[in-house]
Length: 363
Image 1 (cartoon, helix red, strand yellow):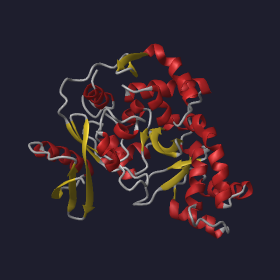
Image 2: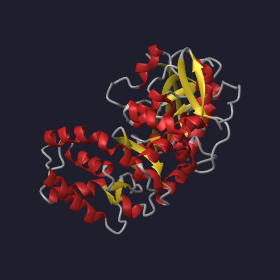
Image 3: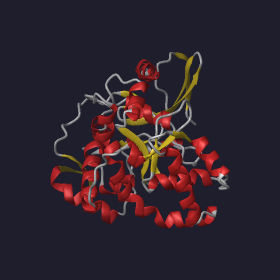
């Protein structure tokens, strides 16, 4: 099982290649969760894994409350199946308690102030009323609670990680928020052991071949807790030993096609890259830093050919259409047509034409 084989099987298991699910919620459930730090990137990450999806299909899944945006793992934002949001949040909430205490001291947010924030926001969101982020900031400011210097963003994230709120449908270009218990009244309830086992099985099914360390990093768990989940479902997993490293996948997953030449355009923050602690199977180490060149936690959209990350791409959406710049790590001679076909899939998803293409080498 060579690195290219690992990469090819990951493409297949993540539904980037092969038969694709019919709905966005099936994509999200199959992967366990989909990273969504950048909303417009994340919807494409779901769309490219869905049969003939348009951006409206992904947004409709949010409006219909089939998927939600929340903060279940590593303190960052993910799309998750709506009914699973609550138990996923509970699984990882305790991991942030020490960090939260330090951050609250730094931002001068005591328990009384956070309780006031909770009441103000709770009253604004009652009866499933989505409220935009700017309006929630205004309400806090009107109550004498400063939202400057990152305080407002932290407050919303804190209330999200503790299970009170989640993102609602977009209001134009603005994010909105809702009360999680009202928005998703039929949340599943799982014990800690059940949560660890279910998330482990979903991860290795949707992300395999992967290591236990990959799983622990993805969720943000200790290696001890990750192993508890892994051990609970180990009988449902298949082992592949590669250069002394154990890679695990679901026993029910068929082998991927031998065709490793697929070219795809992935969004930034995509699960194919950020779903693993060790990314050496899909990108040369010399190019890894180019995915997040500014070291600010922002990951660039990626060009993938034959399972390997071979460059980055950027798009600018204007009134007339989409302008795309491709920056490959090495010359892509002979693959321009395949890249353009991948770009057309993105254009079809967004529903706008491509008006300009630029080709560069990534330095």
